[in-house]
Length: 432
Image 1 (cartoon, helix red, strand yellow):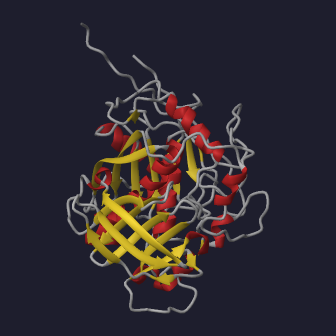
Image 2 (cartoon, helix red, strand yellow):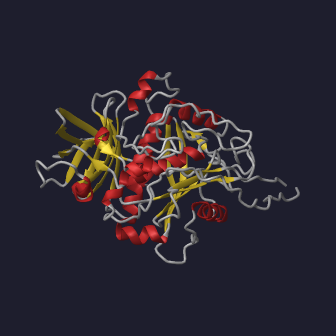
Image 3 (cartoon, helix red, strand yellow):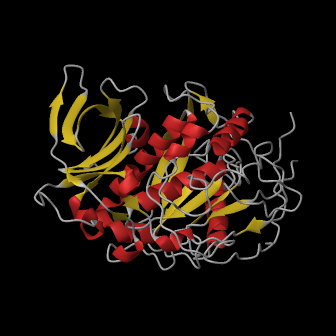
């Protein structure tokens, strides 16, 4: 019999108050300061590779793309293509794009600059300068020209409201210690059990599956490039009926329900992640158990999905980072007797407590995740190896007590609230 303590749950403090999943809330979405129309040309090579070319921002882009089957393998509808690849002849580049008809979306990193692509129809209300060619179906922009909502960046120590560009902190990496992992290709794999609730399903309708996979495709690019970890969708379940297993609007209570859902139907050797369409209570927009990705009971997290694909994708990546042991950057630990290893990291990275538009893990986050993954090979597996669940050793990377902390950051800090300890779960082994 093994007793289990409840791992810590860390809230992603995406303090975008009142943000809901309707395109009408443009004022609470990101803004694109400058963009260019996207004119694509496509061809298929003899080996089946899709070649995509376009010109933008004074340079020529040649993309070599293949289907990202780790994300699309469970696709039930053929309305979307999930693509991965690189720029021809550009070392260190990576591409994750999704295509639905003539609409393209995703990320392109050319080795120096991160670019976003988005359908004009979804970006139109957020464009900040006149169109030079409003007839094109898609636009391209530098992530440095993507401005996240100011209300998402309030600080408990400094109430001044700031705006941050989409890749403001990328340059910080150049002045930091070398990162542990090179971007030469992922050598490990994390399987994720993905579920979407009824609210998400009703928001996106027939496009719900495509929206989920498109966002996960971008998350895969971030993890593969920076952490050397591919993301695989092990299972995808979208509830289109009202009686789904999720009833709570409080993030911590909803996380309990995700944990119970996971325990009732273990299909993944990695974390279970809920993509919710409900407007969560308060300012918390995501929450996950810290360092519990491999744990049978508590390998869980969730993110509120909104109309803005960039906010939603970064939220999901942030929460999965917590599951892999990453703390918040630039923040003192609120856990008694525990020190945040990334307390003195520079601000502006992906694992900061508020969404800031940056897709980059800090050097501290990368090193923390690397150390955690090295000690948890049961679900972060070497490519080709067979994963295993852990219901004891993987419960918490830090062995911390059962306290649920909501570190909300919306001009003030909410005090951590102890939550009732769950009764210890046990596993029984039949006598030989």
